[in-house]
Length: 320
Image 1 (tube, rainbow, N blue to C red):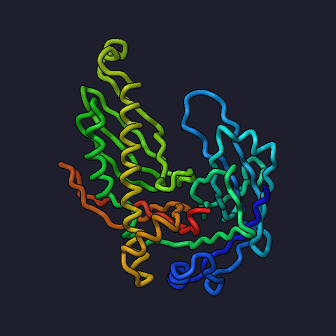
Image 2 (cartoon, rainbow, N blue to C red):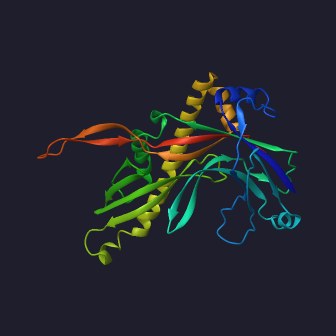
């Protein structure tokens, strides 16, 4: 099987969206340009199975100056994929490089994800055309401290051993602290962009620097309080926070794109949920305000209030 494709960068989202809504098979290139040197992946959807080995597919290529790229999937590769035949396309754009121990490490940002499809049944068109539209939401449309506070209140219900729980957005991570049953817990959530085949996931969170302070000798208190149990509760709570945060960002995105295109929220929502995909390219943590803190016996001081603001990429089409 040979998949021939061409990738374009949208130059005017509002006008291109209208053209795509009118004719998705041929929206034209009046508001898009060929994107060169884009790294395109054809990758298997990895099953969430605790056992067994599933052969997977992972092919990589780059687009040429005209945006064109191609994949060759051999008959032998297709044959071994019978147990794991769902794949999807990913695209990345190079944003820079860095030197690590004398080696140059290239930096890429994701710009497109397709919906998963059965490659053993896929009949590619003569030319598979992909479009991506970089889009930056305003600082006020990101994940705010208020949203984090609300989600923490909900997540706290999952932490059976924690009586108090709070979180604050810092530059590059979210700091969380809590206490309960005589123990204190602190950790940070390192956030990253999601490139999974689950198109409802935009952000992934990872617990780092988990510190649990147990009262009294650990070998005695450990009978009542298990670090492993608390860590499991933390993981479950973070998963819920990320799920709700993803929903919030999706709603904000629909509102912003509708305002820019002049289309109704209903139309844009339909476009996003049925025809387009959204991928976060990167995350920033701008200061969006401050609050005054008073501590008895000390002068008042101000602390920064930050938000988590994504830089997005809207991808078309959703289904190949």
